[in-house]
Length: 408
Ligand code: NDP
Image 1: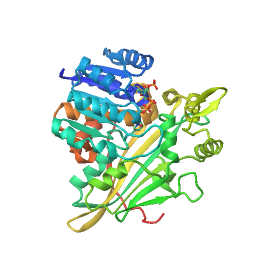
Image 2: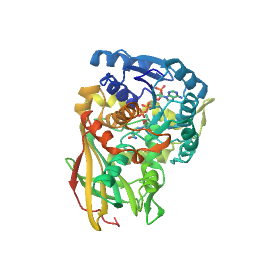
Image 3: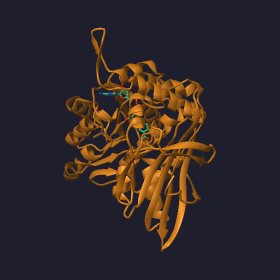
Image 4: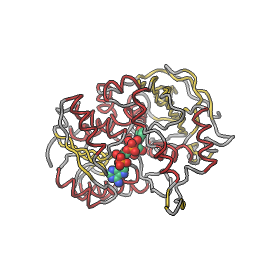
């Protein structure tokens, strides 16, 4: 293992931010390797990093669906930590390769099978005993949400409460990219996420409610700091699963995300004509996957950055008890699309997702997050993580607040 060496796998919108931010912390990340399944994107990021920071990084081709290829690359570059910001489909293969090489693993999204959108940690948590026995750490879901939102809950528990009763996670993109329709991160992942069945955790049970496109979907105008009232839809998001498991005594947790009427209208058309399907179809003698065809037609999320204005606002409204007294805190971050573009050439959605895995890698390399096994972010010390995020572009505010109603 070469001290200060990081291997980043995935060179999309998120990987670009992670690599730039590692280069901006070259006192910690002394050698940066960036790998993806083809070389054009890693090389474009390498050039941007050289121009912006003067730092040279190494780029590689790897098919991260193949454990042997990832293991071979790990052996070659000997990283102190691997950051997986490829797609959720590669999580298990990269975890397996890290285990073989005994190198810590970090990702930002739970494993999904390519043929079935199913959001759960089961298959990654199943690695826990093997990681523990091997004496290495895996940190799951270290993006913004999941990731920083989990750390906000851990911070609230550590500093304000003895127990947490209710959590509402709110996520607004109050920005405009001037395209008729585009997704802010990988379109396939984005559409799979927002068209799934909606679940939230209430009184010890998972409650299913209509998906966001259905007429009975649950939504309300939440008044975001800076952004003002924005229609926010109840959605399942993967941190609900780990937080419901790891926050002792939690009674209710929900996740809300803003969608504009324009976005929903496009989504309805996409859904109605079936072009979001992941079932292959025959087209003029060839098999094509409609969703992959749609992805090829839609703007590359990275290309939105240059004209993006406005901000993202993401945070946790946490109600808990301290010495028997109930109170509520709202912990949130505001991030500006134009400022992140100026800093690293990316929009704020990629930025908020790409900075935290860099900071998580820093925590592991500096021994601030230690241990052996597979952990979600809320199981690790939130203080050094949030402190480091604050000086690396993602500061947070904590304000006194009020609980959201149980019924919306
Ligand atoms: P992109 O599609 O922009 O980038 C994915 C990258 O992974 C591309 O470089 C792609 O290569 C590469 N890749 C895909 N398959 C393989 C493979 N088999 N082997 C090697 N590399 C591969 O995605 P995003 O950057 O938008 O998202 C990256 C990750 O971040 C996703 O897992 C997403 O779920 C997660 N995310 C997490 C968030 C959070 O807050 N927690 C928020 C947003 C995203 P190619 O260019 O050839 O396609």
